[in-house]
Figure 1: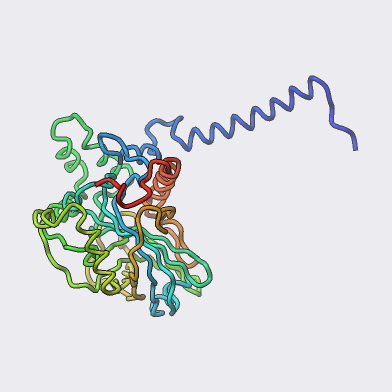
Figure 2: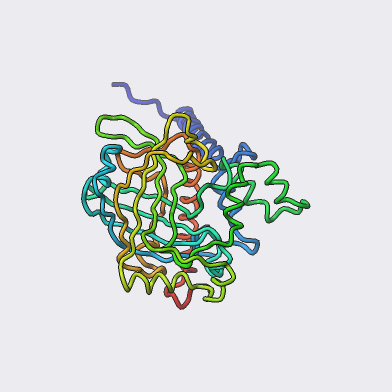
Length: 351
């Protein structure tokens, strides 16, 4: 076999090849970051837009920063196995890890100032397959696309007169969410909230058949209705104290409901509710058994990325899970790089 040529010319040629490879890699990175297309929505832009006017709080999640961790189990009853071959739907008890939270980038925000409450959840089946999902208590999402959501996040910083009114006029799909958000009919506990996975996902059964669904966890606790004003009187961190006491007294439960789409139901737009009367399947019970410390507890290093799915579940044509996945990864990278700024105990946390 002939030896490769040596000398200055071959060295220059090798350097040229290396330079071309590096240029290609940098170009791909630049495209991903949006440097070559300033109007392209990127995870950096989305996460930056979530920050409050005085900047993000170092060490915390860039959204849903205020919350409390829990551990428990998901008790699958086997009813979901006809829709999905995922082991999590087969009869059995599967470890669960989750986090109740408020939809705010401020970990010290008073409870009564935040309408959106969330549930990040991880279920691990006995075969080790992980299912992660991130849900909120709203019945619909505010807008129909990630680009519209980015525009909504930028409204508070806008200097244009009537910026919110102009946004609503340009995005009529916002009306149902807006009506829900303005309602004074709140609940007095994380345990009393329904948590809705507003995005459509595809379930794949043992035969390979696919079916679009949306899922929600519906509380078994009786709801105590409360106004924001009355909630404020109970303290800035009442929800955290209440769920700690409630779970210490008895485990709390939610029923997993799979709502099955019919032909023509929108799967790419979480701002549009599916019609009433769609078939639903109760697939099991989430049991919250123990509240865990938020500061450096088991949820600290979990990224509740909604695209981490087991075999038997996959994303649909809804663009939001991919956008959320990218934003969550960006948030995770930022907060882990700021670990020194994160409080080591609940007493050090912002209030």
